[in-house]
Image 1 (cartoon, protein in one colour):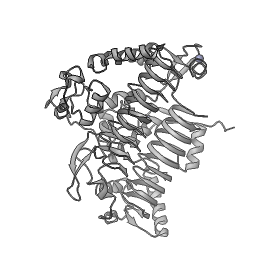
Image 2 (cartoon, helix red, strand yellow):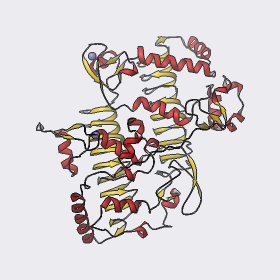
Image 3 (cartoon, protein in one colour):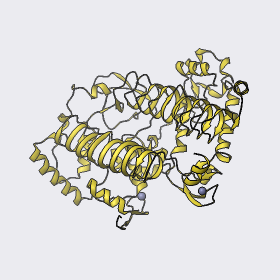
Image 4 (tube, protein in one colour):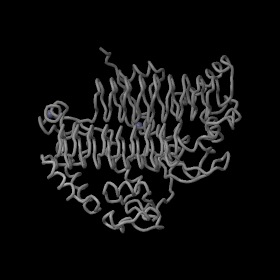
Length: 554
Ligand SMILES: [Zn+2]
Ligand SMILES: [Zn+2]
């Protein structure tokens, strides 16, 4: 049994009281850092200052002048190199090395360094033909997509793993030839679907498993030829599918509306969306053990207070991070062991490193690769490193800096163009600026194009030349195009063309998964009081406790 101790503190950012329980205390001790001064929300919100969801734009490398495509904003505090240049030996990050000045704040000195050292224009590695992508790893031929690994021919994807030949796929693993899906897994030819697994040739599914040829259905298991949860013969099913005429935008809009109403009134929602998790608490976790207060997280053990990531063990306080062990207080970190207070890095036994790759025993460095015993991008001997590190930590402790994450002023772009704003929509301009962060006032809307609402209703009444027409999204007023690949996919599948800008399409779906707060409600079956991750304003009528869901659905 764990001893029942917990600490209550007032958050230094929002002033709200928060509690650190015995499980947290144990893991802070194991990872080796002091307990935080900020509440969970304020900690997480800060980790996302490095996670930019900007509009894709063209720019130039500060090294070669080569053209590039980036999500980083126009006005940058630091130079950017084209990714392959950044990873090359054509430049030496140690040339930017600084001596440490004990009389000044370490964060101030590190920020000066951060503003001198180049960063890559794109996050990710080992990609082929993925220029219009960001946070992209081991992918091929992807377009206008972000945060994905091992994907091929994916367009307008977000947070995807192993997706092939698909469009508009958000937070999904192992899909093929699919369109407009959110949180779907191991499926083929599925469209307009949510929270479904192991399905084939289906449309508008919610929480279905192992279904084939189903339309507008919810909570089904092992079914074929169902429409609106009713059994059809294969012939009648085909006739109904033809009748739906998905090539017409008007029909598609009506069906999407019907689907949303089903989510509200007919579908049963489990109190959380965790799958194959043990001894865990949080939401949207898959294959996790002993993970507490963890969200959107996979294949991990013994993690606490984490948001958006995967493949980690014994980690605490992390956002947007993966492949870590015995680490914590990290944001947008790509891997490591005993890595603390760091961002955008892969490293071991290091602290306060930003955009460093494969480093060990580094402290307060930016954009280093394969280095050891460096401080402020300056090389030291092992002994020199240890001595100076001890002195800096002691100076930082006196200034109240040590153990804090990088201040908001280290952010790589405006907060309103970060992934953070998705999870923390209450991060207002005033609040972010007060914290020293950045906010964009840039007007991204355009009227140089035709309204997408003026497109012909049926895709069959359009020609491939439509791909050269600039369109204006009616909701964001952003300008966008239908890409040639998108056009032929839609025509082949017989789906009406989308009317919204691709980023808005992604965001609309992601907002359904971004809620990290529980709301009190009653189990639809047993009337037990439960806490579930569905805010009352979503209007979900049938929320089930774990036991009742298991008995009635799964
Ligand atoms: Zn707070
Ligand atoms: Zn119940």
